[in-house]
Length: 435
Ligand code: SF4
Image (cartoon, rainbow, N blue to C red; front, top):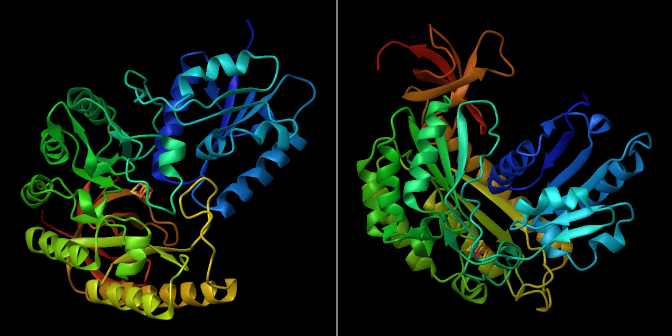
């Protein structure tokens, strides 16, 4: 009997791609494939890619060329690209990367088995408004945290963003199907779930909105914590905020993309809200949700961004007091609305602005962490700490990494930890008794 064919899969980009890779592994498992961590042993090599920045695409192009160059010649090995980059460059990838066998976009994963059987370069890059991958069983990763995609696509078309073009339009899964999936996730032993969508709080299906879905999710036994990412500031409703305020399982942490702290830039980006709207939302969220932590995304050097716009971003970040931020230089993406808008900032100036925001955010995060010394946080214990022998590590409700000296806690437990020291990345301390 011949051995089962094997799949080597590398994932780049966001958590949605992690969840999509689990779906891809599920599609291929249904055809008898098992996973391998060694590309030299694999029958199929697949890179699940990101198109959000040029740098991410360059990295994947180099990696796939390298894998093609070391492809074994003693057996047929199919090498492909999946996900956003495959969709973004669908018209020329197979021509520009010799040896690439197939490309598959975010709505084409059900067609993977056909692509693998093709005897010439093949593509599945049709966007499909109806594709939600309902009925597929993902192969979930190890650990306590599971990802569940509740909606796909985006209708907002922010000028800088390639997502609506590579992931298509918004579509949500039925609430009943999602709750069944959550029960299954709990039965597999996961304790925490992150609900995913490009504009996750735009979720709506058959009259169930995001707030109602959150409340339903909290009824599933076995799941201790529920998070979600990424919401859009303009899609927050009273229904969602009251669910966050009332349901203990909903972790008090929101990733709230700001992108810029200047109204002219927000308007140019077509973000759909002003600085005042954002401030008002933060105020509503903070007054409803005690202990809320906020993180954000910021782009520096969007075309037309003046020194004044940049200063406005810097001071709004300080005023809001974000716990954490993901900051990037503007990267013009082909096909987006801002692609043809001439850039107005030199590369050194972009770097200077970015480095300043990063330094300011690091200092801010450290300050916030220092204010936690002496407090007690509840940690969902994930496993051994990386740097300290015999210590454990996990996340607190605000998604901060906490390392601690245990006093009986084990992975999977909720432990109370007294915070005694901090860096801008980690809190550390010791487990204390009580619940
Ligand atoms: S809301 Fe804007 S930034 Fe977010 S995925 Fe949609 S288009 Fe991109």
